[in-house]
Every structure is written in C-alpha cells, then in structure tokens.
Length: 98
Ligand SMILES: [Zn+2]
Image (cartoon, rainbow, N blue to C red; front, top):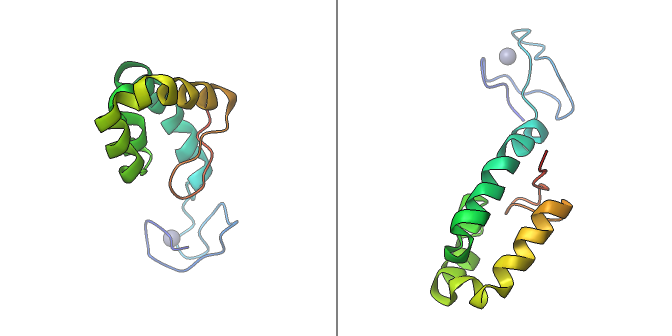
C-alpha cells in the first residue's frame, strides 16, 4: 500500500510511514468505524438495500431494492449477520459493530 500523506510505498503491516513518519490508518479501523453506520442503514433502510449499497454490494443492493429486502426475510438475515459480525463488505473486510 501507499502512504496517504507522502505517497511512498510502504509495507502493508506498517503502522508508521518510513518516508514522512506519519501514522498509518489501517483499513481495519476504517471498517470498524463503518459498523455503526451500516447497522443504522440496515435497520432503517435495509429493505431498500441501503446497507448493501454502502458496503459496495451494488448488484445485491439493487435486487433487495426491487424485492423490498427479499420480502423482509433477506433483510432480517443481513441484520442478524451484522450483529453477529459475519457481514462482509465487497472487499471481504468484516463489518464490525461495536
Ligand atoms: Zn508518508
């Protein structure tokens, strides 16, 4: 991956950039921050597939929008998976809910 600040190529596991010394925000913490937003989207707009659009699953989002969250069943399964920590975004990162 590359440093956000100086653009230098750095090790994927690095926590500090060797080029400019700034701290690296790992994708893991970003994923955790998205957890609460994903849950709220799922709860309030889940039957429209909002949480699927938010996590990058655009095709599934459209299908859920057209079927109203699979008549509510698919929406309920997604919501339970989110709470259990089994829901992943399109890149395979687990959406963690704190
Ligand atoms: Zn840097």
